[in-house]
Length: 334
Image (cartoon, rainbow, N blue to C red):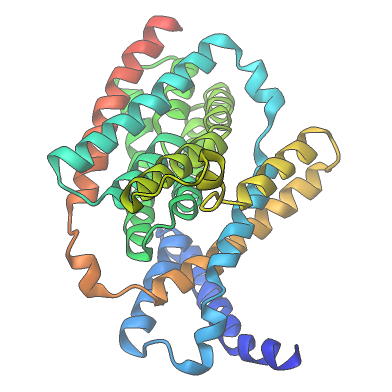
């Protein structure tokens, strides 16, 4: 046991060092610290490589990824989801479904992107940004280069929409509630949604967060749905018919989703204080830093060049379409 711990320590120390460096750079530059963690890991992995002494510790990044996803369940407030009302629930269901289907279609048909990358882009833009990317990546056992491309693309649009949405809202003189619902419905990650909403007004911020948290609650359903879909594809590819559907689904099923649901339940039963929920959120953010630093170290630039600019175009076209239609619907409803 002691020897195992010692073999992990150098790699863990390296991941922590890269994570701290990303945090520091993120505090003095406008770049997102998760993007910086990927980039720092990528630089190290493509220059120094992954020496044997750190390989075991760096390889734990998937564990930190899954654990971070589980902890994010504490931020899903089911009472707020219920309080949103049927109109918002229907809008969220429609936006999530439309975005996922549109991105999947564009990725596969128009831009010829591989299935895994397309699915990760669809989940990230349709549900809750990077959290959905990493959750679905574990569900379908996605290639790490696909995860990096999808996560980086989503974070790029987080930065762009954080600036663009308030400008569009001001140009169109959108009412605060309309802007908040629209932002929560069509922007990607919770942080930028909250920032954009409260930058407009308190009312816009409250509606933006409420709608966004309602969308976030779909992450478990989407992760399970993709797990089932890819399990059936693998089974079909193996030409095997001697196992039942439950067995075929359970083997690749992301077991961490069970933990995610458990944390959601514990948090919504009132068993966690506000301070506890905040602490879990901070812990998840640090775990994601370690995970993304390790992910970056295992990426090879030659692999990334094969995909190029296409993921960005896919998400851009989908965002323009869904946000435009979404705004028209929100204005009609509210």
